[in-house]
Length: 335
Ligand code: AHM
Ligand code: MG
Image (cartoon, rainbow, N blue to C red):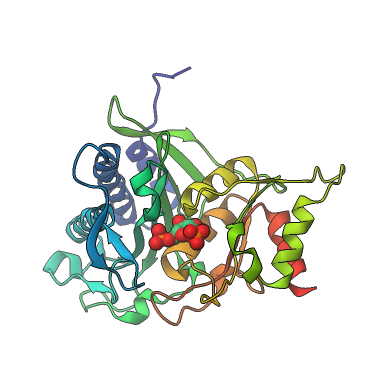
């Protein structure tokens, strides 16, 4: 039943500012700007099929992938929002080879940098399947006033001050952490506000869902092949066989498992020895949210958040979700 006492994203962000007594509200303002831009992207996604926004944009991004019109749209909306909010001095995005350093007077003094995948799962857009947006926020390292450098964007995931994802699903949700637990907000289209719907999300330590593109089975490391067989075996005590669920949109697959319990896997595959997902703007923010919800995230042999990025678009295998499932995968990989 809908309660009329709603806590909007902005109310919540302001309430939580008390957790950071020395902060001056810049991060709050940045998060709130991401929320507003997400509403604009959401509106467009909702109209896909009716307006000229589905299909290829006719350009190829740095990953060599065909950009979709919505990729380009979402990238522009979030870039413009971050450029103009005054708190962000530069961004890295899946759609650009190099970081973008904001040069105007106010942005130059911004405290934060943002790494983002503006529209994740874009191969699903044309078919009305859920997609998402992912953000990883860091404090700048270069002194304020000076243009930020590549090193500012190559910080370990552990240094993130906040991580956010937006899921454009059967409803639209924004989930974020500032290192103090994870909270989820559902967009109420009737008032145009993200409202607190999933306070203090905790993911089950054990789950019964494994999410992986099994079409690539032949290429998986032996440990992952053995883990999949383990998931499929019958065992009453551990309630196996587990269920296999794979949408092909990281945010959606991860979000379902976060709430229900489960694990998302993207291991190395043919032609992609480090897997497909990008460390800086996909694996790191998802991993911070997983850990803050009591789950875990591993690259196989190392905690994702402790990997030192060498380049902006570097890839990493990702095993993220319920803690005991992630630990089990690590054991299979080292056995
Ligand atoms: P994208 O950032 O180009 O959209 O690619 C990332 C997506 C993830 O959302 C998803 O987990 C993965 O690619 C699916 O890949 P595959 O089709 O190989 O299973
Ligand atoms: Mg992506």
